[in-house]
Length: 198
Image (tube, rainbow, N blue to C red; front, side, top):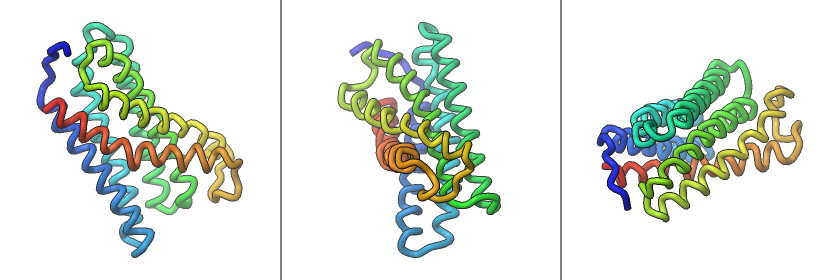
């Protein structure tokens, strides 16, 4: 495996982003049993995890920026676009401008955008054999599920605010499969990546 120097800040930012995602998952589970305020906490931590992911993305881009400068900047653009889209979904549901379903479609789309960043990272670092095969393969699985979030876009265009008002693929793939990717698997990948880097 090629030795690549990475600032430990990148590793710690990945760990913090991963644990923010874990708390988001815990809060949505608690919300299903206890109700508020755990739903609002879940929404906030969704955006916090996306923001911390962007910090990690910016810190980690130095690994491959010299060899893939265009890919590094494009990846960062999508990480930022994902953060903004997730934040819009959070703002809309917390201020009650929309319901939970439409807000969730924004979050799914936002994390699909982050999934593009993850693809760019996995492509670039694999050329350097930076991650172990297990961490790399786990990241590929996360990215594949996260990219399903683009199927939520028709629901956003439609301004649908209930699962019954959209085609099956918007809810089943665009939201549920995508959410399993970013809400359950992706925080684990971030923690694994952070441990590897630190």
